[in-house]
Every structure is written in C-alpha cells, then in structure tokens.
Image 1: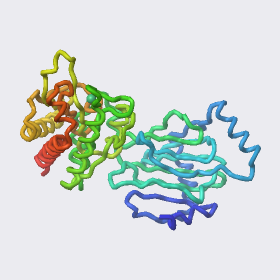
Image 2: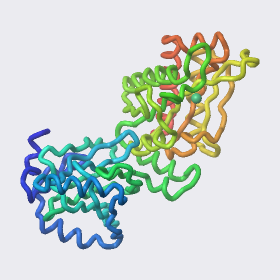
Image 3: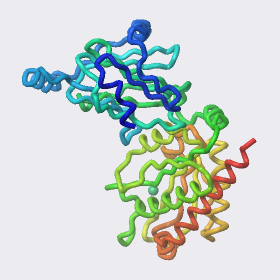
Image 4: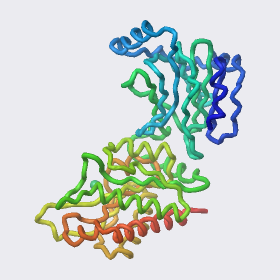
Length: 374
Ligand SMILES: [Zn+2]
C-alpha cells in the first residue's frame, strides 16, 4: 500500500482513490482539476472559518513555526460512519458541489498533502465511488464522488483540525418516517453478496435490562457475534453497529447500516418486566408500522426462533422503535426473551442457547432473502 503514495511526496501531485481500485492513476493533470474547480460554482459556499476561539491555535502555531506547513494527514471513517478529513493543525475550508457528477469539492487553503497520507479502504458496497486529493498552488483540493442516491452533508465542526462529512442516502434526507418505496428499490438494487447489518442493543454505560448482575448489553453482544459468524458461514457479508462494550446512540446505528447499504437490519435485544410479572417469558419480533418487507422478515425469523428454542410465542408485532423505523432496508428488532423470568434468564446467559437463538435468526434471514430472490 505504501508504494502507491509516492505521488503525494511531489508538491504538485494528485492522489486518487477509487473504490473499485480501477483508477489508480495518480498524476491527473493539474490544469484539468483547476478547471473543474471553477466549474463547480453552482453551489459555492462561504469560506468556513473556525470560531474566533479556534483561531488562536492557528495564529500561535504559524507564529512559532512558519517553516512547517499545515498538512492534510489523511481521510478516515469515524465511529459514526462519517468520512473525516484530518489535518495537522486547525484548517479553514470552502466547499462546493458539482451535482452533475455527484462530486463534492473541499478546498483547504495554506495546506500541503502529507507524504504519509492515510486513506480509507472503500468497500465494494461503499457509497463513495472515488476520493481524490490535488495540490493546487497553496491549497489542497479534496474531491469526493458519491454513487447515485447518496449525498454528503457537512457536520458542525467540533475539532478545528478536522472536517467531518456525513454520508446519507437521498431517501433519508428527503423522507420522514419509514420510506417504503425506497425500501423496495434499495432492496431490488442489491447485487452480489448480501450484506446484513447486526445491531447488538445497548452498550457501555447503557446496560439495558438488568437482573441479578446480568446485563442485556452483554447478552445482545454475545448473541450478535454468534449471529454474525453463522451468517458469514452461510455466505453473507456482515456489518456490526458495535463489536465492543461501547455507548452508541440510535442515530449512528442506523447510519452505519445505511452507509454500508445493508440489505437487511437486525437489532438484538432482551426484554424485562417488573418483579411482579416474573412469570412472563417468550420472544417478540418487531417490525416498523406499515413495513411489508420488514413484517415478512419478522415472520420468517420469529417462526424459526420458536421452532428451535421452544420459547413462548409472544408474537410478531409492529412498533415505532427508532432503529427499525429509520432504516431504509427491511429491518426487525428481536426481543429474544425476558431477563425477569428466572428460567428464561438462565437460558439467555447460556452460550449454547445463545447459539441456538443466533442460528434460528440466521435461518430466518436466509429464508426471507431467498424468498425474494428472482
Ligand atoms: Zn433493549
């Protein structure tokens, strides 16, 4: 990988990154990129300067070390699915959109491309088609081209050394509530290996349901990892919203699945009731209201869970849970049992039972996906 960065060491160089690795030509003519910039005026925006308090480090660092230029050190995805442009010091930038070719251009004055530029690996399902960096005079120009149906939104700057860009599907921007028609098209556009998004409920300080020192967050993570392994063995690709005991809001969980263009979303949870309802046990599988594909997925999965675990049938239900209501792909939330029922709790913490549950969920997903394959 390191050898491909040679072009970046030359001052007037450009570096491009193509998600399919088709285009590895790094020496794009500088004149072309400058001309392209001037054509990008349809959505030119104001120069985005850091707040006054953030300017202090710029002035200080320039006064102290004028000989060392600010460098653009890399681009990377953060835990919120945002593409982050990282610099060695505070930066200002100007952005524009060339809507004709889905290319967002970020011009960062008074910077150089680092000779050790870090670049993200773009998967085959990435909504980003190409990232290109050009040195144009004293400025670094970062061009990010998205595939059709995806947009980039600039986020509020919390770190003056970074520009964090949120990738969103167009449906998510333009539609409120559950985008049913988009679900259909997203689903039928899926080609190649199906990608399943697995969302282990809760995490970090949010322990979820708890009883006798047992936390929902630990059961959901263990089950989710088993589910991921089984799905991979079946030939599916898998993306997790979390693989560690970390705190994660609901919005980034949805974003991770959307950014990866997952074809199916499964959130794993454990249920609880008051102490006076400890007799209640069983499995509930949820889909978003009015989501026909989600309902179908829920029915396949629920049936498999009942058949292989023998758990009580508490039904396929519809509910407005955030993660299944805001995902554009068929999505379900499985309440795998009641931690407040002593015998079910002892099964839920048992790894053999967790595996049986995971196998059943995987089988249901597989049946759902195969039933819609043409
Ligand atoms: Zn939960």
